[in-house]
Length: 196
Image (cartoon, rainbow, N blue to C red; front, top):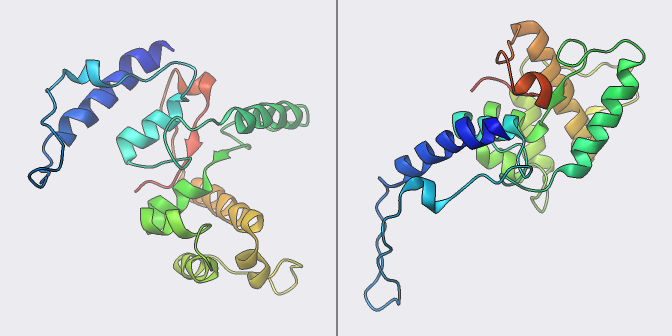
């Protein structure tokens, strides 16, 4: 909560100030009036308990959306992750060492652009978008002995997200990514994403 009120709010305000440089044309008689310019702090706030620090950081520093929009309810996923973390810790896995939190959507966005991230699940036929993403992963190959083939991965949302998560973990290990130091990420968690 303290990080969101201080650092997170500062990131939000910087974003609002940079947005003021955009030019908007409105037709005459459209019914729109010129809004008063409010101080950045008065126009928006990051409500505590609605956001995770890692999502705010990824959005404002890297332009990535772990979910479809910032602040989208993620309590079910966070609760499930906390349960899985506890179960896996009992058999020796350690968060951010042998257990990673990954956003498949952010991985697609960081490596292939936001347009592909929006459409790899929602297209009328996302198969072609997914196929282009797989082709873009130059160091990825499918084992001939695997029961899960390329076509199965391209056809199924969950299998494709699992592939993206595994690929992100592979890049994390191969490129030796480093987590931001200190709080709040040490306790709140960190979503690992390829640097863009």
